[in-house]
Amino acid sequence: MTTEMSRRGLMGLAGGSIVAAAAAGAGATGAVAAAQTGPVTPIVVDGCSPAAPTAEYLALLRKGGVDCWSVSMLPTLLQMSQLLEFVARNATAVEIARTAADIRRIKREGKIALTIGWQEADLFAMKGESDWWSKPPKTTMRLFYELGLRVVGLVYNLTNPFAGGCLDPTVGLTKAGRVIVAEMQSLGILVDVGGHMGERSSLDIIAMAERPVVCTHSNVAALNSNPRNTSDRVIEGIARTGGLFGVSAIDPFMSWSREDAGKREQPKKRADVKRYVDELDYLKRLVGVDHIGIGGDFTTGSTSTIHPEESFAFPPEMTYVQDPIQYATGFEDISRLPAVRAEMVRRGWRNDEIDKVMGENWMRVYEASIGG
Image: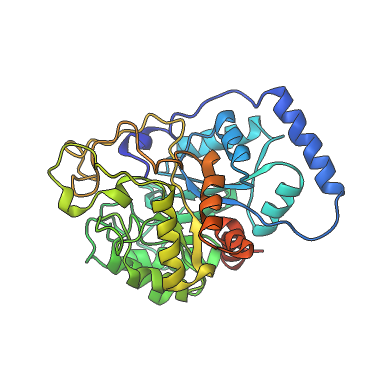
């Protein structure tokens, strides 16, 4: 849930390299890991976070035990360029992963893997850089694929030329959208449905999918009636493709419903880690443990605010005033991920089930969608 503010920059990109000590530590860890043999250790994946790419966020990822961070942005050429610059400056600590095998290798080398994702696909049809008169249409997709783009949602809340947004749930996938989805799946870009995308368009994509599709960051509509949340029908459809549902940690999606529109105060009962794991429990019953992932949607390091009275894309039925964006108590940033694991253990989840939710389900989907 990046905001309109983030359209003007990737959540306040910060310069500077990782401090020398951290870089040396990463290198030492990598040398030891590369020399080790034995069973593959489970991968932990931060499945969707539009946090600012900074040394500070990398430190939070390490504290949370995360091996792979899926950067999720509202795309601009400047954001893409700045992200690549960040990776180049911090090459001893982070590397762009283009395949699932890359992620495992990067972990062995003691670095954090980074996968690039977009929350809308408008840049594929850049004015003056695409040709929709030709057959098939010519897009910029291959360019961004070569730069490392691997996960894309077509639309961000509001309907665009490709699909209906979550605020237009009955609008279906367009003819142009079908072309984009087919090209993404052929090339090896994971398609992101649900969440920001409306139900009808999500179901249309699920019906035509030839590889797994996912919802990278949303919550369960059956647990809270919020227009940003995803229906059981879509979640079950995602599972049928072999995909997964990434659960967001943003508070209003778990605590604020359509019935709360018009209220000015925050909800008296805020979501916490237990409420977050309620989502995981529900999904386990609905589609099984193989189709659940973490998609915290953390905006750490940004200046993101949401004022529903002033925002068309984030109306009052979707959220209260968030300044800054509010998360589940006890899971306010990715460094708190161990608290989610602890709550799952307390509720009787097996270690192998927890490992799947924490990242191995993402790895299975990556292997089937972007390549092993």
